[in-house]
Length: 507
Image (cartoon, rainbow, N blue to C red; front, side):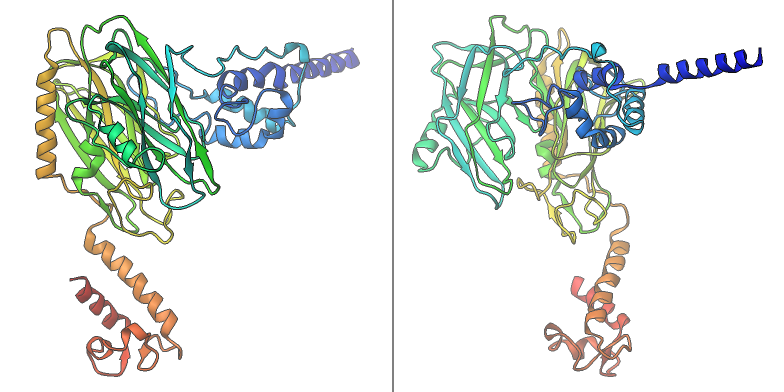
């Protein structure tokens, strides 16, 4: 009897162990195929394929690492008050399943339980476009150097005005195309600029004004989406399409000839829409100037809605030093809604987040944005080591920062009122921008950095080890001012004298 119970117990433990075994075919493949393979397959953005057991096993430990750190699948928005369309975040259970599978040796499992690959859309993700156009000739991007901003005009020759539901952008040289903004031009200015430039495309053109209008854009990580419900851009008769491109050299020469697919609709919109960007002009009006070493340079902005609106999408933009970007809406009765919160910004992955449903924001709602930059040496994304002061600018190693909420007026509301008041807000920011806040007072930061600078000079110059710079030990640049810095006339410069001189120089 005792032997029977022991055998039965062992059999039960064996059955339970087998039942708990996590295999690729039964547990991991469904996660990978549904959340990773759409990009990790031939012809798409992923650098390698994840379409089979061998594909996944080869990079199992990497997949475990990037899913546990929530680097992949790429989705940087934290859970907000509202659901986002196409949310790609894995659940904690899915992340644990991948980790347990890797740590158990990555068993394949019963091949008969392997799910079929989803029926992915090849090529155009929004379906066959109504019109496909592209750059007339390739543009050469050098292997290195500063970022390149280049515009390309594409004649559309439309016999009549069209309502545009979506533009799907297909970058040709994916490694160098960082973003592209779309515009229409009915003035002929883009054609004139293109004709006068001997190279493909032209440098820049004005992006607004009579006869020129925005049509959205694309950035690395952006997923094509049609405007919701009956919303659409208007593309005038005989308008040219302008692609305003930002190229970032990748280390090897590339040639780019990107294309776009245009999706039209015959349904005339019942209303228009607009964007509320805070701070305006991607932060240019705030005179961004981030000191070297500053961990939390913060710019905020607020705008109160003058009409009832319905929000349908939100996006953020910054460069390498961007750390946290957040937008909230405080309703008239005091309730605070989280619209977008990206606590760990990634310059290499930017997208627009569409809400699953329109969000009603009544008149008097206060929109507030916060942009935080980290210019310290501890920021792994900082392109400058040691850090240097960084100001606003269009280059990737300059900085920008803002959040944009797309809204339509609620029924019976006048979007012109919103646009007028927002233009006034932009003017107010330009005349009197809110000062940025720092993680520490300016004087305290100067003291810390000054001591580091002085300590470095002393270390390099002090030959006899007395923790001073004796006359004859001073670097060439200090020879002419030695006597002025040597306030006690002992023919040696100590740390206190050097700090006093540094403060005088700062003033």
